[in-house]
Image 1 (spheres, helix red, strand yellow):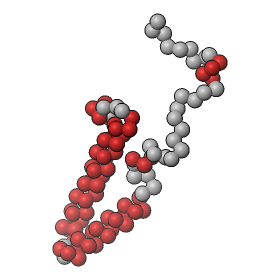
Image 2 (tube, rainbow, N blue to C red):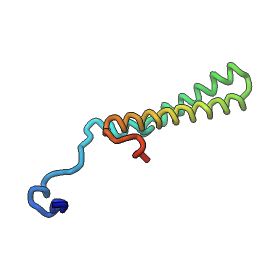
Image 3 (cartoon, rainbow, N blue to C red):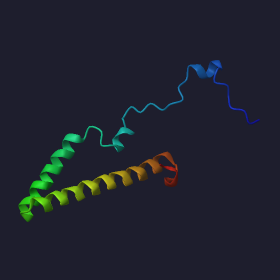
Image 4 (cartoon, helix red, strand yellow):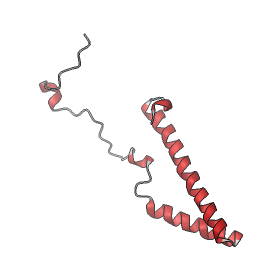
Length: 94
């Protein structure tokens, strides 16, 4: 008929239309709670690259590039994973 169901019906008042995420799988695509590990990784990468090159400016630039790469990689792989699991085409993700 083309009309949406009534939201005031008694059968819909006690049911939830949202999916309960018991395993926090939605939150796993973000860097939430991983700040400490990421800072330690950045410091370790900076120090190792500084020991290898001997120049702090070059080590800082390399660390910045590394942060950019794993942020980009995490974002692109997260979009691929989200598109695959929800069966929504990747073009529709913002």
